[in-house]
Amino acid sequence: MDRKELESQIFEMISQLYKKDVSELSLDTTFADDLGGASVLMVGLVSEIENELDVMIQLQDAAACETIGDLVDKVEEEL
Amino acid sequence: MSILEKLSLKAKEHPMRVAFPEGENEKMMQAAYECAEEGAIFAVLVGDSEKLRALASERGLDPEKFGYADLQDESLIADIIAKYTALPDTRLKEKALRRRMADPLYFAMVMQAAGEADVTFAGINYTTEDVLLAGQMIIGLKEGISTVSSIGLCEIPGFAGSEGELLAVGDSAVCANPTEEQLADIAISACETVKELLDWEPRCAFISYSTLGSGQGPLIDKVSAAVRIAQEKRPDLALDGEFQLDAAIVPAVAAKKVKRESAVAGRANILIWPDLNVGNAGVKLIQILGHADAYGPLLQGFRKIICDCSRSAPVSELKGNIIMSAIRAARKGE
Image (cartoon, rainbow over all chains, first blue to last red; front, side):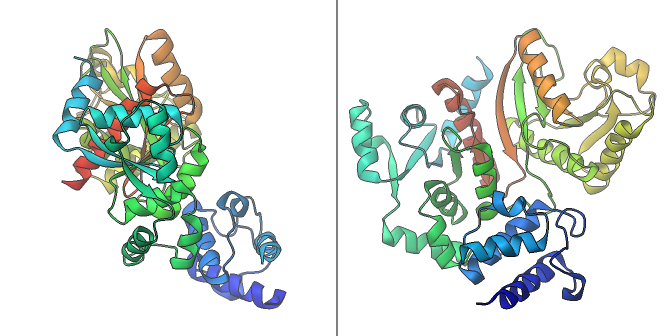
């Protein structure tokens, strides 16, 4: 999977979980300020990444990501 | 008879299945064994069953007192995964579950979620964060609850409160700086916890340095907003504040400071701290100056009962927490 495809899949997951339109999301979108930072949603996101991309990200590592771009980097490292 | 002795008798009425993902740990195995032998629980050790049996024998414990859930037992794995994935609102699919279940903590929680255990009891080797994260991922939070939190149960010699020497306090361990919504949820969960464990009619006070507007400022605003949210969410519960500590638990002070009807003022049996700074200091003051025993933390907010014990807990403390968790699970199942 190339980087663009990965970004697109993660945007889609975040859009569904955080109830945001994909057009509102970018790699600079922050989890804490722009998405409300709810840890329950991050649990859902990590689970979805694990189910759909077959990558196990530790929740602590995901929670440490400031932006969506940071999370995409983290997933890309594990792919 | 101490509160723990009373609770132990109660646990024996309906022994629950408690899954122990850290059964290899000597203290954990001993505590599980003693609880099982006393008839308070059915203890299920999760891991390598052959190794666990051998360890039990080496330690002079009868291996037959335990049940075992082996991480390599393919029929058990297939069964609990099928049950788990059939549940509504579960997050992980089979492949991801299988990977996570190589870890005994996740294995135990999937068993519990699937109905093959009533409690997951861990924390002697796993960190609190490990337990909370696995709990959020596998067990999930109760509907309408936004945060995991905890309460402790204090037995304070000489205290003559509305429940005698007992007082529940929270959160002193988990949720560091709750928002007003989270503070409301902590109080609501605390009411459910004391009902499950002790059959109390909860009277829950939100603690502040102000009583009903006697002071002003953002610290008080957060607490009073939490009171309003909690009361709106659960009008069936006695939740009130903001109160100073004395107005919450001393009837004479409440009569002076609280100039309206309150089911809680002066006779609260649950105190909700505004944040973890207060909670941590508060429970230590009770323990050190009040010579109290403090039991817990009792985790709350999850759909099922999970216990995260202290890593330094002696066997006696582990047993107390196992028994309290089992009683809460029994009440949930009623």
